[in-house]
Length: 441
Ligand SMILES: NC(=O)c1ccc[n+]([C@@H]2O[C@H](COP(=O)([O-])OP(=O)(O)OC[C@H]3O[C@@H](n4cnc5c(N)ncnc54)[C@H](O)[C@@H]3O)[C@@H](O)[C@H]2O)c1
Image 1 (cartoon, rainbow, N blue to C red):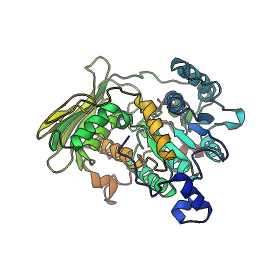
Image 2: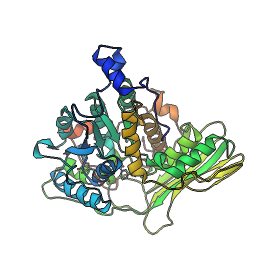
Image 3: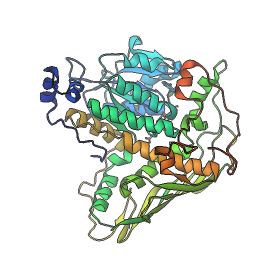
């Protein structure tokens, strides 16, 4: 189970659904009649973004619950859609999941293009939408999913900029009002070791957390651009979205958000300010930095140092370590303190599957998970670190969340997700990166 559960007033899904039909209170009236499509015992799932994680998450969802069927797909690129079903079958075969009867995508439920997601969301009989498009689209796709009255599973991170992250928080709030779930892809919150350690830390096993260290130190997995002759700048940016800050938020946001989320979760709040630096030593493509080093100040004397690097041939480490007044914890590993306990259930389930199992169960129980705020806060913290590194300035949480006079409050990276639908997308110049002391963001 996970800490993102919002206490829903619903106790009995079926009873309240009947009350809604009888014209009960406005909140209840917006609760969907069932997770199941009308008259069916199936959980009918659509996927927006049919790339690696799209096929992975669809497979995880099929594994999580035998009632799941994948019935619709939407993608900006036709080749991704064409490859999707076979990829899912291949992944399912490895897990001994019989996907042949359960992937029911037809030409009528296949939607290609930047507005394809809108057409998919107009389907009446979709229960859950998996959003695995590039990061910049997450606020738009989540908002549209909730507006369409569907439950969502959205991959991390929430957004590439503060405007987008606040939009995800608002969509999460709307989902809560409508009784819809928002599962999010911060899978460590569904992983047995993390959950066991989190419980012990919350019970005081290491005293009060005072500091920490978090890392995503890895290689650069993509050193070439994939170019298809005749494709537009928009299509090229989508195909190579990991290379562009406006598409992915830079790797401190796209990847390191996982570790920042763990720090936020264990400490119990997001950081109050960030002071950091970064740069580009080896990359030749796109406009991202390849390393960041950021101090996050959580207030009340609590600091966490973060390092994120994507440079091949260097030392690798991915994880978190937190220090308390009476012990310490590697949230994904060992805990040392007073009266710490070994986990009761030592068996780790696959967290990528568990997050879907928890999501579907929460909807069935009428107490839908809602991780929109937690993933948006981890994303905002990462963006705070990125802006500090790019500009050379201290960046405060309030700069991104409250202070409308801050130069960063209204930061919205270009192209915006909407620009892809209107066709006004221009490729950024390779190698033009922010210079601290002169850059605005
Ligand atoms: N939780 C995790 O551990 C984890 C791991 C990997 C990726 N991710 C996240 O999953 C998401 C997708 O990553 P990926 O590696 O699958 O990328 P990918 O490039 O393999 O897939 C993205 C897909 O989205 C499609 N797409 C792009 N714009 C679209 C639009 N406007 N509408 C519909 N489809 C669109 C692309 O054509 C592509 O098929 C990212 O947010 C990434 O951060 C999470």
